[in-house]
Structures are given as structure tokens and as C-alpha cells.
Amino acid sequence: MDHSIIALATPSGIGAIAVIRISGSESIKIVDAQFRSIRNKKLATQKSHTVHLGHIVENGRDLDKVLISIFRTPNSYTGENVVEIACHGSPYVQQQIIQLFLSKGCTMATAGEFTLRAFLNGKMDLSQAEAVADLIASDSKASHEIAMQQMRGGFSNEIQLLRAELLDFASLIELELDFSGEDVEFANREQFNQLLNRISEVLKRLIDSFALGNVIKNGIPVAIIGEPNVGKSTLLNVLLNEERAIVSAIAGTTRDTVEDQISIKGINFRFIDTAGIRETSDQVEKIGIERTFDKVKKARLIIYLFDGLNTDTSKYENIKSQYPKKELLPICNKMDILIDSEIDSIKKILPNTIFLSAKMKTGISRLEQKLLSLVDSGKLSSGETIVTNSRHYGSLLNALEEIQKVKEGLDIGLSSDLIAIDIRQSLHHLGEITGSVTTDDLLGNIFSNFCIGK
Image (tube, rainbow, N blue to C red; front, side, top):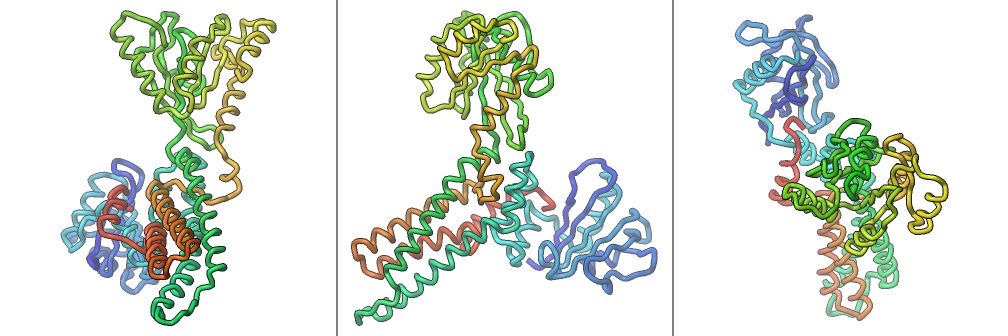
């Protein structure tokens, strides 16, 4: 992997500037041959982390006036010599420069190849590399904070510490196998059992955090359902602060689901406006109602919106019985036209009801607070490690399963050789997270999901 790779590191298209990145042992030499400094500098003699103004030249013709940044091995993102060319943002200029260096020995970088080289050169472990992709994809305060915490190595450090402690005891167990003919015990079983209990607690905490991490990373799907004309589309528009869904006094206006996403206090919520639930002979509307129930199945939270002038709760109770494991939030709309006695009557029937007026935009803050209360953001504010990656989650589950086997083996007095097998497996699964244990297929799958240029 010594050849130099090149890619556009900024988004493609027209912009004020573009950055082209080249990495490889010969990258500085390759660029130096096509660079004319305004001060007659040679890049080959310049220090790391310096910036130089000049022109990229092809056969005596100036392609563009550029800024060249030099990062020498090992103090670069990839751990190799890296050159970044800041040129003007014309797509033509970008392609001319890239084509020039391709003709001089560079090859186009594949998706995530710069970060893959950083991992292979020991600049970051695998979980930190994956956090780079999460940081690029972060679209809320919460997802940004978690990605930054993982890039700094918070999650990696916890896993590495657990693995190191387990490895110490594993080596003692393995040593016992060398003296299997003699009745010796190098690993103190009581201390080992205490370690296994502590590791189990940490793994369980990390596994439990995935529920929150998955929500933060992918957003909370919220289905807004109810009968026609109760204000579902109006509520969606108010929450999004834009006219996203068509609002009409005609029943059955929403024939299909309408989705959009907003961030409330750093947490993403994906709201889904659905077709009104009712009996109908309209075939198109029937399809829309069928899709409503498909979305309800996938939603984590169901907002059941009803008109304050119609307190028939039979449909609410029906939805509640159909989806007993779903969070179901009753919301009474049009509170602006209700009198106190009517509100009190509804509270007696549905004590957890939130009252609002989507049309008058009142009571929306109470709804937002209720939505946020469904997310355990205490872990986030305390800086606790939160697992967001499903691959990590799977490895943690597997590691915990093997740790449980080791504990059971100790309890029944299993022989050291059999206990050692389960310890090796748990070490393997922990190593999968940080990259201490990898395969080409695993790396290919992870880095193929990166963007080109990173």
C-alpha cells in the first residue's frame, strides 16, 4: 500500500475552493515536480505542517494558483506523507489537477482509503475510524458529541482496558496448561471471578446504551395518527415550522404518508404524517390507510391526535391494544375552542393527554418536552460512553455471552483448557471492536461505507 492515492476531499461541484488530497511516500515528490512556488521554494525541502503559495503547472501551462499544505510522515492523518492542494472550486480545474497527478503515478482513492491507511498505520483504532464516518454523517448536536467522544478514544479506551485485564488472567490460565501434570494454580480464581463480574457489568452498561445511541444516530420515528380532519397535517407543519403537508377542511386530504425530520434540543425526531383512519370506499385512500399502519409498526412513538370536541376514545383504545409495546401519546387538539369543563372531562378519561392548538401554535413546547422526556439524555450530558454502532453492539453481545460461559465454567470447576477456549473467544470479540482482530472482508465492509476523499 505504498503507492500514492488522490481524491477530492471537498464536495464535488462548484464552490469558492476545493481541496485535493494526496497520500503516499512519494506524494510530496510527485506534487513538487508540478509546482512552481511564487518564492522559488522546493516542497521537498520544506518542513511538515507548512503552507506554500504557487501554481500547479502542466507542460509549462498554469492550471491554477493554489495553496499547498504539507504533512510529513508520521505526523499526518494517514501516517504517510500527505499533500493537500487548495485550488479554486471550478469542477474543470479540479478534474484537470486530478488528471495531471493520475498521469504522474497517483491512483484514485477508493471510499475510505485515507482513513483505512490511518488505521493500518496505527494513527487510530477501528472504532475511532468508524467514528470519523459518524462525525461526517452527524446531523444533530447529540450525534456530533458522541462521534467526537469516540474519535477521542473514549469507547476504545474502555474496551482496551477490559481486554488488557482479561488478557492478563488469560495468560495465567494458559500457563497452567503448561503444567497440567502438576496440580498448580497460577490464576487466583476468586480474583478472576471478581474481574469477570466487573467486566460483565461494564459490557451490560455499554450494551444497554445502544438503545439511546441508536436513537441519537438514526432519529426517533414518530407516527402522527388519528381520524381525518383532527389536525395531523397542521401539527406536522407547526413542528417543522414550514408548510410541509397539505392542509384542507376536506376529509381524506392526506392520501399517503408525509415524513420530515427536526432536531429538538440536539435530538432528531422523524415525524410521519399519516392518512386519517376511517372506513372508506375510496381505493386510493384505503391504500393510504394501509400505509399508515405500516408506518405505525416501524415507529417508536405513536402520537394519537384527536379533536377536543369529539372525545370518543374507542379508536385510541383500539390502537393501544394493537400495539401494547409502543409508546402511545394521546394529544387533544383545538384546545383553543374548549371550555375548562370539557378539558377536565377529557383529563378524567385520558389522564396523560397533552392539550394544544396546532392552528394557534399553543402547547407545542409541552409536546416537545414530552418527546424529549422519552430519551434518556442524562447519559449524554454526563459524558458517559454511548454505543451507536450496530457492529460494536453485536461484538459486545458476543463478548458478554463468552464471559458468562467463563463464569459458569469457574462455578462448576471446569478444567483450565476449556475455560481458556471461552476466554480466547471473549478476547476475540472485544478485539473486533478496536481492530486488534480484523479480516479483509471486515475492513472492506466498514470502509466501503465512507465517502471518497476520507
